[in-house]
Amino acid sequence: MLRLLSSIYKEFLVLIRDRAGLAILFLMPLVLILIMTLIQDATFKSVKDANISMILVNNDRDSLGEAIRKGLIESDFFEIVEEFDGVKITEEMAKEAVAQGKFKIGIVIPERATEAIRGNVNALINKSFKTFDIPGVKKRTKKSTVNIIIYIDPATSYSFKNSVMSSLKEFTSQLEIKMFFKNFSLALAEMFPDQKAVEFESFETIKYQEIYASTTNSEILPNSVQHNVPAWTMFAMFFIVLPLAGNIIKERDEGSAFRLKTMPGSYVTVMFSKIFIFLVVSFLQFLLMLMVGLYILPAMGLPQLEIGPHKIALALLAISSGLAATGLGVAIGTIATTHEQSSTFGAVLIIIFAALGGIWVPIYVMPHTMRIFSQFSPLNWGLSGFYDVFLRNGDILTVLPEVLKLLLFFVIMLMIAIGYNKLHRTK
Image 1 (cartoon, rainbow, N blue to C red):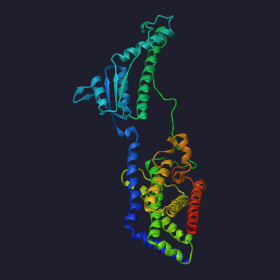
Image 2: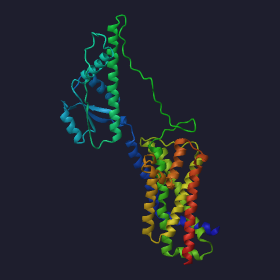
Image 3: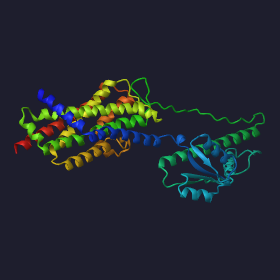
Image 4: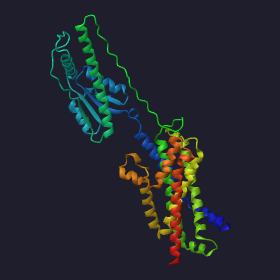
């Protein structure tokens, strides 16, 4: 026991004397969370908040053009631009502005578009009442096509283009329905004098209600903070692999590891002292990231982190994630022979684990094969557990599978380090 306490004290002194290493361990994840949360919060904001400018060339100047213009303005998604320095924008000017990347989208409504729609409505009514002579409706059976031209910047995202197209189709379909109902009502009034024309009233019969599923009655909406804080906390906790492995190699190169072996005790005792110290560091990293999400990010205008009511589950996840990270660091430090090997292999391995674990790219957008591989990333286990607590109000039983995976990973890494050390000492 005394040897273990002495080893822990020695590791503590080594750690606090490395001020640059401490700064990297605590400042690096803090900066990462701040930067990535700010970037992703701006990226995932609604189009309404972004207030994207759009060119509108309304050559129709009738019901269709006004309906589209009014709909785009009232949606608050876009800032409609129809003039440049007091000059009305033409189709050629709109095309050139979008081609130069000044605007994402330009919409050109052709002349007489509304008249063409009216003609199509009349043709449909005439087809329905072909045996009647309707005074208020022109005899027309040929349908016309209205081509609304949309100029799109090649850099525009596919999802944004689809949202604009869906909005335009909604505006035009509403106008066509309104025109058809109005003319149909007038036709009936002409056929039956006692029947008055009915005014068209638009209403929504079907409404959509979005509810984020949760096992409890409380509802927590996911946001950029709740995604980035646990993601980059996991990345920071596994980043201690590099200084931990470097510490082991440094002791071996300087000869202090050999001197420790000559003292009473075992290799496991020395390793557990390192695991304990770096486990404390990883838990302090976790607490720092929580403080950032609770106090610093809200002060910067971002949402506040909702940690949920199950604090013990969070602590259990943090400890098991820290053990998994320290176990990996001990294994790499034991096997690697140089600082270059440990730093290169450790950094690349962490990046691979982070990429597979959904730190940068959400798992649900990955191809099916990559989603299968992501299940083998310890960062994915920890991240899934934090999501269960932050977003789904999960308790200890909910995160227990992820905790067991992380602890099993720690045991396997420790067994690899101990086995390699015994094999190396017998040679």
